[in-house]
Amino acid sequence: MLLSLVLHTYSMRYVLPAAVMMGTAPTYVLAWGAWRLLSALLPARFYRELDDRFYTIYQSMVLFFFERYTGVQIIIYGDLPKNKENVVYLSNHQCTVDWIVADMLAIRQNALGHVRYVLKDGLKWLPLYGWYFSQHGGIYVKRSAKFNEKEMRNKLQAQVKAETPMYLVIFPEGTRYNPEMPKVIADSQLFADKEEFLCKECPKVHIYLDRIELKDIPEEQMYMRRWLHERFEVKDKLLIEFYDAKDSKRRNKFPGKCVHSKLSLKKTLPSLLFLGGLTASMLLTESGRKLYVKTWIYGTLIGYLWVSVKA
Image (cartoon, rainbow, N blue to C red; front, side, top):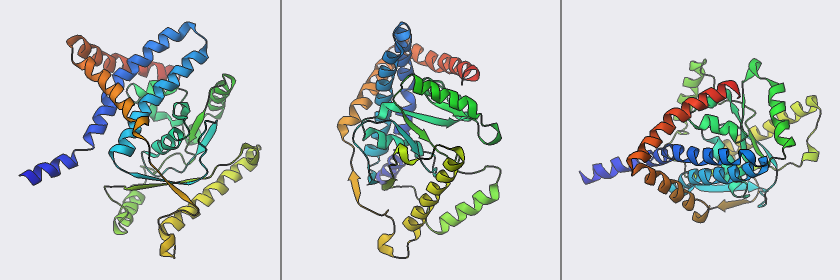
């Protein structure tokens, strides 16, 4: 019986992070909303500066669960500067939580609050957060033929004009699979299962970073497209070597020196205690619980109305 209880508790360990991350959403949105109203009469830079701090607090809590709570090892290859800088982050898209890798790198550059995403349009309907991401500088785009290049360009230019610090995250591949191709998905899953690629644990995350100076990127659209294709060809070769190198010693690692990067508890635990404490305090009183529920309901409805008009 004791063994069964231990196994059940172990299997439920993923419930706690999900509950905390979603459970603190109303508290976070209320705190951010209060600042949004108070800063309405102030220069925009004051709003952005504190909004970036709010975002840092929440995402630091998220990173506590993704790094410290899971015990995953982060292994970084390449050149990762420690100082803040404006970044366009281009990455392959292999799993649902690829976005957290951008956070892992940004916090190590002390730029976590500057992260903004180019997001697929459907994510704007996330309760509370869909609205907030657009307020934090996220840009929603429709894919394929529905992609509105002019609208995206205008939104980015507005950010540049406002001199907004940017750690702009883009996944050029757009998506990880096509739900209209069930046979391809089924075949991929069978192959992954056969090769033992599927597992419940991911003890290590290998991140290969290739930092490219702005001057080395072509400006003309035709050359830019070709340059981007070439970068992803390089990426595909790296992944093939990582998984299938003939020399077993080169397998499961990228070329070059690597650093085992462990995130300090000082960068994540205070955020968890702060947001968790605020949320717990709210839920201890009847008026707090009512406000909490109303924030979920009315905040979500207001957010849906906002993104349907603005995003």
